Length: 345
Ligand code: SF4
Image 1 (tube, rainbow, N blue to C red):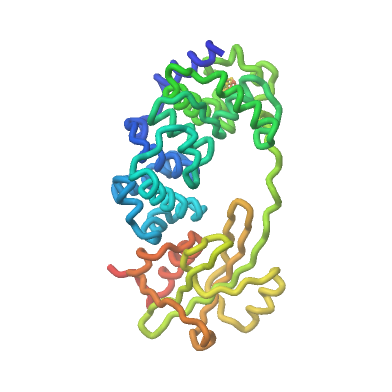
Image 2: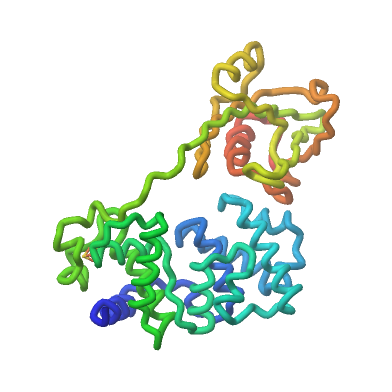
């Protein structure tokens, strides 16, 4: 344990990336970075982090923002429920803790959207408390180094890896240790093609010695992907504004704005519905974690939707309304091919 712990810290001192959230012990900034990095890779998350910190420099400012302002910045990160949680958590910290982040692991865990990993990250990075972080990178390093073939996403495996991570933790330098093992997993012991040839711990790595690097860690298969079939109705009025409606609760993209939508059970029903209708471009495929969406877009008129009260937006307004990535992608193509509808210059 000691040798691995020391090797990780030496490796980290040489190879670590210079990232803004590593220069601060402000729990608010650390929390922001952790929530964003749950969604995306470091290089893609960095501009989001910078935008959030500059638009909402304190938890008070974030709490006072509208949900729409927060979701606009969140746009493109997916899992909008996490964007909403981020906002709700800021409000919770202001309401319950007077804007001061809680300082213990147990209190941090009570915050909305903060699970064991994020609580351990904030507790160690901001307050130097001895809590081991256990994310995908850490699980991979532990599984390979110790040669453990228990699934990392099943209860028994989780318990074993959590125990090991806490045994390995350097209690005198928990922040440094946690950063080191996560960075080692991200850059050296990568999911694909880990750099075993130049690895400082290859001599004692079980997976390397037993030729199991490619098969570890073990992960149980995910739940089945659900297929969904959308037909979006693109309605442009006389003023060249486009009709939008807001999505309701208990489904993907809650609270986001999209075109009037009809959903069908399968592609056959879509084909029947599209008969004699004017489609725009090819259908778009959009993959989410547990859903695969095929979206068709058709030109339509609001006269066909008399009972609906749509929100008509022009392109200048679109920046102020959060929209799903799928609609965003469609609009990029649509604008290029439609001279009537252009973003404001
Ligand atoms: S030898 Fe390879 S598998 Fe083992 S810890 Fe190093 S990089 Fe990871």
